Length: 235
Image (cartoon, rainbow, N blue to C red):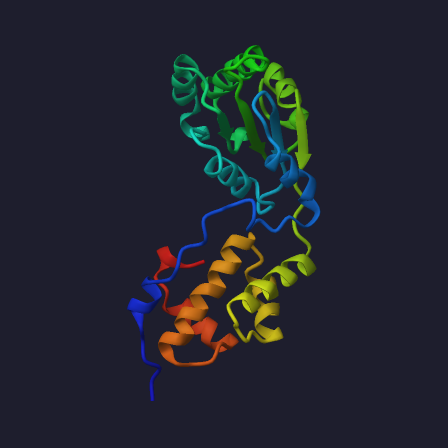
């Protein structure tokens, strides 16, 4: 008998939880997370690390918890920053993937750092959080901008060890009363070793799929769910 298909169930896969500082698995990055929690106006933090180390998660988390904060995309940084500087800096400005800035974007961030420093001791002080994939002086940016990235706090983000990921996944499964086999955890870490938001979202989706199909959570069930998922909805 052929396996029943449930496309509507797969289409209803829960998105990853919104990033917060609380649901970020810090592992070796505790100091960086603590600094973001204590960030005040007039201070700046530069985060750097490889893909999957959580840079984007942390930027979005700190923006979400700061009223009036602005998250700047590298693709349109120049025009966005020009508007922010002209209007007066918001309480926090965050810029992700700074290594992707073009010349105009680099000029915009250079002006942003200058305005941030000028206003740091005034009632108009703002905070900055910037992220990239390498240390400040190794960035493929103009020299005067590279030095500005190191003006205040700098943290290197390390990738989580498999033991940290496994511990976090087990805790998440336990919080949902899920019975996950060691085989399934091993498969996730070897075949889906991405950031923790995607891994936990995958477990949540599998929980829903298990309930809808009335089948226990197993590795074959996970593979069936993924096989039925449309390309745009895969993890």
